[in-house]
Length: 113
Image (cartoon, rainbow, N blue to C red; front, top):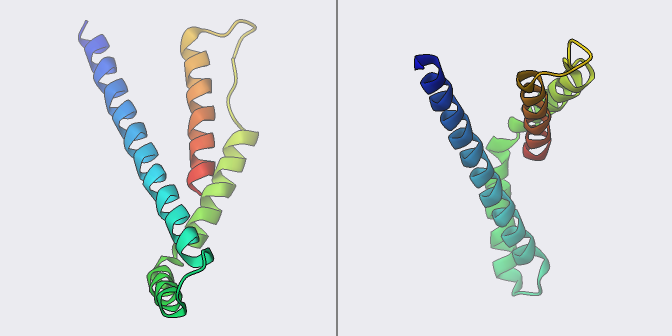
């Protein structure tokens, strides 16, 4: 009984972490769309040039993320090619859950990259 409560607690922690990651991803996409609209819509030249300079100043420190994203993509590819599958002819529920979670995590990481 104690182990099942621990498992439930771990599952809640994983769900909270996944929810937080999806929330951050949503905010990032919203920000990108807003920036895209500001830069591409017809607007005064001064406003557009200030937005572009602000974005470039913000992106310069973030360029260190690009190698990290490349590493993540390579890691995801490696895990996808060498993913563990069912060990016997019939998959147990635990193996199926682990397999599905690994696929979801890989998909999420590709989106984040």
